[in-house]
Length: 445
Image 1 (cartoon, rainbow, N blue to C red):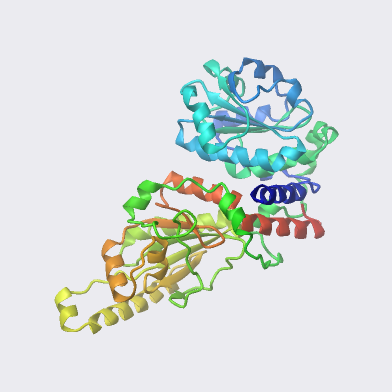
Image 2: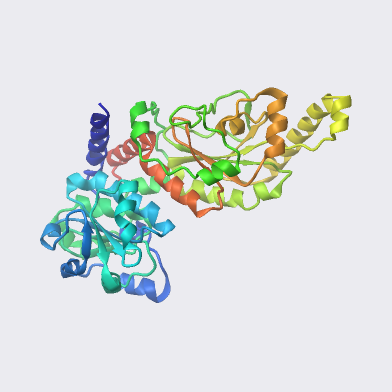
């Protein structure tokens, strides 16, 4: 049953990606600048030297030969298993192998010479199915003029380096372009790329990044629980869970809590965002503590802009109030009065602040405490959570409202975790398919 569900999801995605594509190369974000970027640009639409594969050694999985990639789209990842930043890219490459295997995509992991002894164990831990080889003396990297790992290179069916040093966020679109065109189309890529500069219909990438005018908001029913169970969610950052005093021993789904975003205990200070078919990105903050939001809110605006319809970013304010304990013992109403003042000040702060994401008031710490697995309720909960509040903090929830990752929004691990969640969340994938089908009907791509 489990394997059947996975197969159906894969076939649905493959069917979506089989639609005609007239991708514009300027929508593919490349990495690097200066001389490095100029060298990478100069390689694009030149022949990929397939003989370079002969210099790769110590394969994990079946070796890939020049004949194996003839007439096929190829995704090459240069990476290092010991390098933290490579992990998210390796997972992205694995997703591409899964989504585009039926269209002939060949994925090759070219591992750094240094630390290659950990490549096989890392591949097993990350469940990587694509072949991995050792780049002895970095000869392969030097030929591609690659800089620091990780790097992505996309080769089309005509054997041309179509996209060099591509940003991870653009890999899906880059692979989709070369996977869906014929060899003849690839051979005429120079003319097609030139023609692509002319204005054309919107693409699914543009929609995901926020160009959502006239795109309907679909009613995405929550996919089967097994699809969530089998999804390749980001590795939990247990150090952060300890730091933020999380207790996941009583929740479901391997101890991960499930929260209610529709609870009456949450007050929306801006219009409630559409959560349907979206990953929830929630940071918790208090206007009494600038370190909880000053650097975070501009970043969250950028996250919402970059991911568009794939995510719903929410700033959940929590009441961190300062009252004298002796005053509380004499009259408990001072706490209610302090919360009322806090609420008034919060509303004023939100009204003066121009943010491009949603703001809510978690007035009784309901979302925050349940997300951390805390069961205590009432006044005791508020006092306990206020005393132990640590920031900055962001929690990532899948579209079924399950907590999947917790940590600092200022950490590199946050971007990696969010990118992976967007790529694997079942409801996000279903919403993307509907978006793409709608665009196809409207003359987009």
